[in-house]
Amino acid sequence: MELSDILEIGPGLTALIGGGGKTTLLYTLGGELSRRGRTIVCTTTKIFPPSHIPCLLDPSPEALAQALQAAPLVCVGALDEQKKLRSSSLPMGVLLEAANYVIAEADGAKCLPLKAHGPHEPVIPRETRQVIAVAGLDGVGRPIRETVHRPEVFAALAGCAVEDAATPERVAAVLEKEGLHQRVLLNKTDIPGGMETAAAFSGLLRCPAVVSALQKGEWKCLW
Image (cartoon, one colour):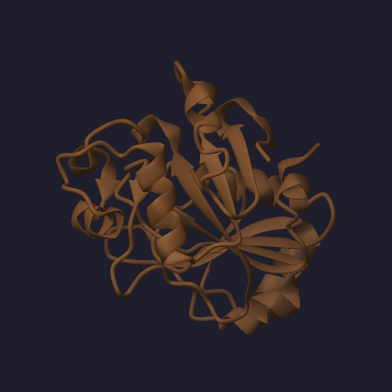
């Protein structure tokens, strides 16, 4: 079964937040959904421009429509001074009119596997139909200070110190207290003990959860 089916990705806008594999998830879902309809991947924060799919820099609505006729999957954004992609000047409504599916990376985690959110994060557009939170299992069990972006926020929500471990119980507690998502993707089950760590989340989350090794193209429902 494709990951987009397991995550129940429907037409419209899906936002990805958290850490531990958002960009890989972005392109995995984009590739699957583009076999069903016109698909746009984009960001509301910053990502590196892709080299494997067409990347449109601040296109006009007409240029976007033409690009989607030629290729069912495109990336849309604008370059910043560091040559990273940020949001396009096109309103999200225009992207949604042009495509059947829009997948947006709506968060940044400084390449860390786990994430807590400041007051200005994540950047979820109002048109979003579903939010998927990604957590990297390689961060679980390690000190919060080392493995979490915004460790002080995470520790405050979890009721512990930043020197303490990011246990499944604490990760789940932060996810539930923030309450930003409809589904959770626990990524990197291919690390030693990964499936055992994922299983420890069983019963701790109140939403559907999926486990994956995105780099290997493996995934399944946890519950």
